[in-house]
Length: 343
Image: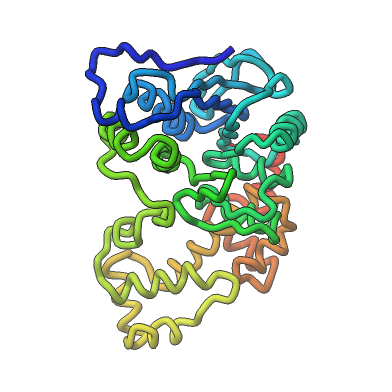
């Protein structure tokens, strides 16, 4: 059973968009919903297809939803979505898109992997939004392809699949594989795919309907730049924080950081206290511990390996610092995750 967007909505269709697309056969798209999928990433992926149909005044895309259970799937925000059937019943689609969300690494995804591999053998294009990239990687369907994933899940995926070419771009389209970071990045990826298939007028019409002021390029950064994230514009402080974020396994010393921006260590201390309310050492430690928490939550890495990855040479120092920062030791964090208590 396929769901198609209505094309007789009140808003007038763009004449340029309607005339530009010459493809007569509708492209079939199956959205493979994983339990606790991201609603915003899913919506950002499916709505451009509906609006492309509206732009052309006919069905450019036909889409349907599928899940493990086969009757419904629950998003991470608690909203239940009805689906057409089980993963194992999926066949003869032009495109399959895996929609992931939180705790993507917990299920074994066996039936989804099987469905994706069968589709791949038939030549179906495979895509993923948010953490759906993890499913494709686990199924061995990203070998030899460039891919991306949400920035929060990037360290975990890289640690489990060191041979894959996983980047931090907003989205990545590599032949018949396409992946994105999630959130509204899914809209940019789908708009780019629409532009490739049906031209810029259709894509521009869809972007306007979404109040999406421009279609972002694939290589744009996922996260806000440091200036926006920290609410600080001081160039020397921003450079130092950037160096901290880039040097987690082997942390730089205070003297090295200060010399990188031609300041004394005392001047650097004053700069951090003035703008961030904490010392450089405390800020650096927080960055490293947040990275450690991501690895604990998203990977099965031994805690000692996590500690070393985040620049701690002593397990006891790591455990105490983690407890002081987050209120529980890393071992307790791992137990909560394993018990399914997060999210």
